[in-house]
Image (cartoon, rainbow, N blue to C red; front, side, top):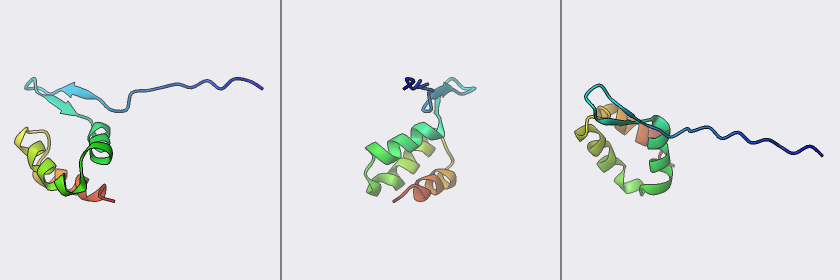
Amino acid sequence: MPARAWRLEPVATLHPAADGELQVSPELLQLFTDLLIPKNLHLSLATLLHSRGLADPIHARQFLDRNDR
């Protein structure tokens, strides 16, 4: 039986924005949403992202609502 080859690729990334601030990829935000952040903190996260300039409040809230299970 041939061995399976696994290839790992990064899916969660941080990258610099034009102003030098770090921006999070949607996948990294998804990771925090799914694993680390209690569901009752979604609104706070949306506010935090907006205050850091990482997302506008409507898009951040829509992202978090879409991923609220």
